[in-house]
Length: 240
Image (tube, rainbow, N blue to C red; front, side):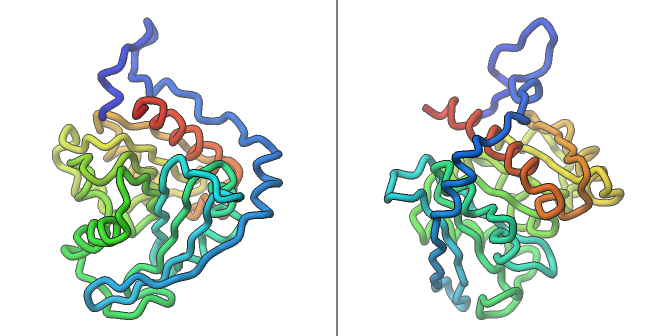
């Protein structure tokens, strides 16, 4: 699905480009997040034993979709438990999964070459039997995601947080997965570079997060969550 094909108003731009993603998450959802519990497990994937944290909608409610969170370099899946990010998404009806990428955290097995990273993510998604996954990818974990964005076989949409390796996007029109690119206003390196390199993707929204640096999801988590959730809801509205 490429939102660029949906009608535009006289103001021009795609539906995604014109979308207001700043609507605040209801406070009752944030309160409900306090009731969400984390599960920890392992997924055996070839030579890797992948450590997984998961938060599900409370009360065994059916999940709207699955969101997989990928951490940046020098971080781990615990990044997404800070400020209750996983729990907030679960309270809003999403199955929220965060993994320790190979070479990080509690995942056992060797670090991967850049060439092997997309296959690893694809295998993880298929092993869990997930369909049309939403991805939140921070910084260097873009190496796992960018090569998969030329097909919508596995990915429904992607949030790229100040992603690395965007200089490798040499044919933007082939990256058909709807994409939200976010970065902190104090990020003077990867964020602005990514925005410049990805602005011509066929279905993309560029969103700067105020009062935040490179790890904008930690510095201004509420703004980050608002942008992501509104983006996901918009994408879901066109998958029904």
